[in-house]
Length: 162
Image (cartoon, rainbow, N blue to C red; front, side, top):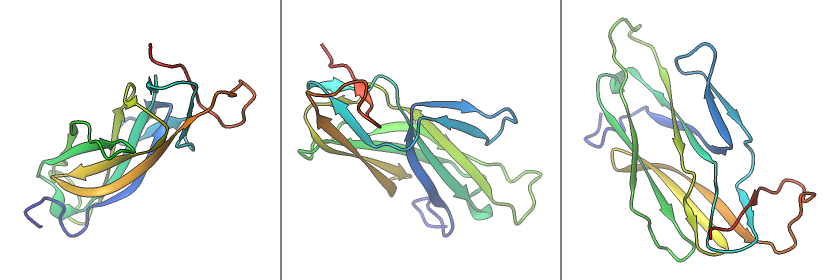
């Protein structure tokens, strides 16, 4: 395993936005994600913020990464290249106790990122780090749309911040 904690096998399997997250009925690593599939947000005015949104990251941990802490952080970058302070959003740790020596474990990190500020239209980027090493990124397109109506297909309507 490298000093960064990334190891030889840990990987980010998926990264997406969702309107709502619930832990599955079976508990453990099962989650239910609702309202996934869009990274475009339509705002009638700026500055604005999305009132309800979750960032979901799914990691696969290999046996060599068990019994160690893996710190997860995210960065939020504006279209102007301005970085909001990095946010520590959790720690992954899987005990090897009672696991098959060849076991692999999926770990989900679900972070409520509601309220992130959108100062103007353009592409914003969320970067995901584990132990200070970047594992993935996701782009959110903030659009200025004065003609947005409830009939606009696929649009997420967001009220302006006052």
